[in-house]
Image 1 (cartoon, rainbow, N blue to C red):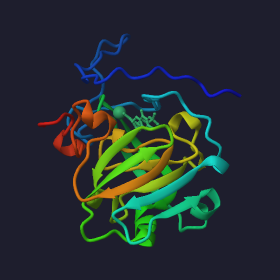
Image 2: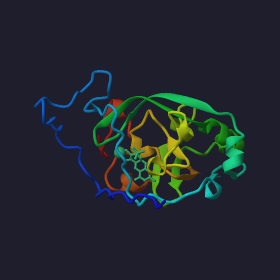
Image 3: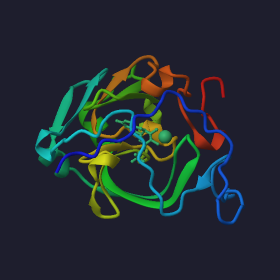
Length: 217
Ligand SMILES: Nc1nc2c(c(=O)[nH]1)N[C@H]1C(S)=C(S)[C@@H](COP(=O)(O)O)O[C@H]1N2
Ligand SMILES: [Mo]
């Protein structure tokens, strides 16, 4: 089967006013349990990809940690699956406005990969890069403390290609554009270096609870 082509995102799309639900005429459900300005997408899980979905087999997937580390490391599919797994059960938030309650992802905590590579004391930031060339930057501290994963499953099933399978970064406490699909590696740096959306005006950190959507927010 061929990979499904997805509509590329036009850079950068402001979230705009909430869309009304046609048949009730009521605005979308803004939920007090969600970060400001977000609505509950319910069962809908939109696909948002700037690139065409790659046909990336597990055998062709690898994950590197390089840059300011003691030992640059690379894991293939089997090596990564020999590492301790854990689950994330909770919400995700896209900067375009949709959120999903109670998602469930499985994977390996980033702490495990980082401990193996050994970040140097000078490392403060990370550029996450995908097998497709997509990049996004994050403070190193946002990837530690059991808050970030290399995710292989969603609801117990292998991650589908359009949602980043075979493996994606998952950093659910930040806006979802930080969760790079088809993740290939992390480069540790001693400074912040904007990634794809960040060069196009999006915020360097992207904390949804502080509504850090755009640079300057
Ligand atoms: N490689 C890659 N990763 C990406 C993106 C992308 O365009 N390419 N989009 C980001 C954005 S804006 C969001 S909201 C989520 C979307 O993930 P989903 O398509 O599984 O919902 O992936 C993020 N990771
Ligand atoms: Mo997004």
